[in-house]
Length: 471
Ligand code: PM9
Image (tube, rainbow, N blue to C red; front, side):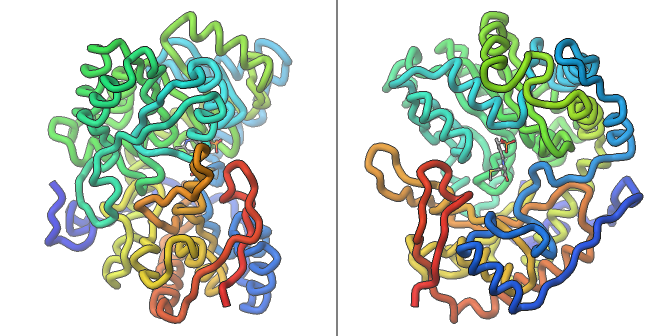
């Protein structure tokens, strides 16, 4: 479906101009700092973009998590917060929205995605278990490991190649999965950890055909499928665009059909669901629900707020309905593509096809002279900030962390610097400025040397590690 002769996504899918289905009602000033200020800020931050102060950032593409702009309706919802300790009416709105749009029976609120991952992993994983998934995600895998499990990557090989144009690079390789189930036994696999889209592969989607076939395989063995639904709305857009038979279906219809092949989901509502904080778990199994609803009171808060304020749950319930609007999803993904097309026109290597939430610069290719254990993607993120105050994030060897058994670095095939686009926040002009800065850094690539890590925390090191230039 993707034609390698056509360079940009505009050419691939026929460019017609699009515009955001909203207008701006309130603005937040941002400022460009001087090169000297940025140099000082970066040194204080140990060359880790997570450790910068946000007031020193010009265009913040660190993450699309919790950084989106809420609508006027969501802000109005904030004023309708019912802050009762128990039985808040906002919880029932949230419960109804999840049931209607994702189709699951039982809903447990959590403070954000990793709260939901913690509960799910603790409830289902026992020491010695294997959890197959379509590429790891940092917080998801750490919870699976802390619960005693071992994550096994069963994504298709194409996902590990940034230049491969497979339209559904998030797909599960059913042969790899079948082999694993036969090897370790279905009783040692508590569930398949399926993500749509796949963040670490570049925001790549899973096809409906793949999840349908996955359901068939799992039914043969009696294995459950739980979905990381964090960016599942964006996944639905790619199915609508690329998969036969779905062109005329709405995002909402595709979303609910996809979820119907899974047993439940966990959610970081800070992405697709358009809120600054929040998460949820939803399952169809009443026994599991009982367990999760009991565990949530230990780790998050009562089962009718799970760590969120009533007002947050109201904004989230409204966000869920806005998130599936077809025009919203299209303009969100087209904005990401706009940036991707600018970079592609300059032959700057990025992960292709462009995914749903971010542009991923191929640092391994850009800095091909820097060995992976000198952190090329970390170096690239630092250089971009130094050039223009634009903040991205490392998604390579630092994010991959160490193997808990051997203690060695994991060496992922993908060594990427991510520029995540917050929803409903930046304009096309911000994308132009971003592309020009990436080009300036790209043009100076040969002069760059790598870095060494001088401080490394035990868990999720990418958040807090510190680096120095190799002289
Ligand atoms: N993702 C992101 O920037 C935020 C922090 S990690 C760098 O991409 C998936 C697919 C995510 C995700 C967070 C979580 C955890 C689960 N699954 O951040 O705890 O992308 O709400 O969600 C981040 P929370």
